[in-house]
Image (tube, rainbow, N blue to C red; front, side, top):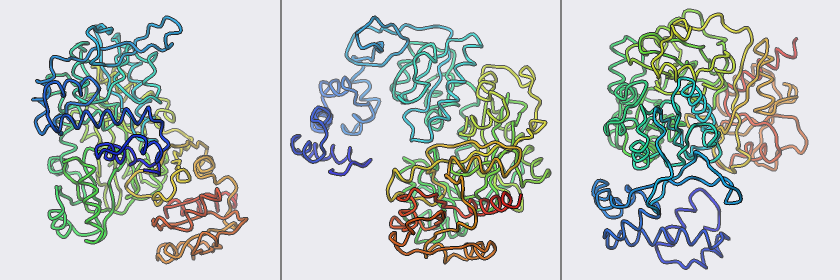
Length: 596
């Protein structure tokens, strides 16, 4: 507990539940006792429920914000039972005083509390409720914040009141002046249903809140709430491995061989049936969490255990890993026709999370035939799923065009594609959700033409220097915390504009060389690349071997915590590249720039 990590909160709660004195915890952690006393109170509420789950203890826990699900867990009963036992203590909504009592303040900004009898929030009428993304991890919130705010604009332009439910304090969508009303609430069924009961909205939009909002759609529909846009059944189909595989087979769309499992013994059998390497991932998660490429039985066990923990009971997807060019499209659809703003090509090959890949639009290496096939597949899927609004489809191109993922919601690429095509994609998707057609929006089905003349490159930004010893090698699990955009008349100029900001490669030339490690240089693909480019390569074994003054770029494919190249490059503030495709493109673009 002396070290402030993301796990310390749980150690603190465990210590409090074990009876450690608050003064000792304050000394160990240097956390102000006021905050520790709040944790101590939570621990006491939970202890009461575990020992004697009386109505009084449950009502007290609810009053102080303990969720029904948490109470049900510790009382070893159902959520429905807890809900019935605490029904006499409903949530009411109080207005946030944005001036802290200094001046009179009236704002459409509300929070729930079980302390109180009267609502300060009154229904707006003729409204649409929009779910935000919640307190999502760094680097994965701004895109959904962007789409949520643009959704609100379109709702208001359509003549409805826009109500947002979200609880990420650092985002624009939780600025009370953005929507007609904001509820600053956890995105759970328990907290949503009282809001819906009070406001009686015409419907709820879940497409712009990422996976958090999509995961709530099924429960909302079961409770009689109208979810606008793509049907919940279509959303479930894209997440259910077997159903989605059957769908692709019916539409004659190529897919990687795969299956679903729920535990380790089944995973081993599936791995031997499909064959290594495999892409393993839990369903219903965002950011490639617990996703990995597995090459043998030894690697499989920890990956499956991690996926089981991250998936919370959802099936684990196991697919044949296809090495090829990854690309993706965002699709706007009215349920019958679909419009594709553009095809985005990834620099890094399949196996690197799309959020960490450098993305280029228009595509540079996809033939017209491949692009036509991508458009055909996207149209087939949008029509078959009766997609209304927006969805994202990811492909890998090898001997054929394979579909690897379909997300029936806005993706992180929406702000990027909106900027480079000058189309407000989230607003257009919202208007489709509210009943308009592509024709009424002036959108011609198929791929946007003409293709812009300029090249736009989206490059990730990493915070490895803020997270010591965290994994740095790019993989299926997302690591970036932001992105930059480079635009230019050619690929090379756009590439250098993007890389200068994201990888800090403003002045590097091939003569400056690379610094790598023994494990990386031992890989045949790396040796081949080095030989083909006649690079000056320095191999180090320890961080102290890093030259005091150098313009060299660090390059490593070694993901061990004690990786000397990663540690030394970050400590010296030098650029660090952790994917071979990134380096290949850098070398090609730098050579092109020099030759010109």
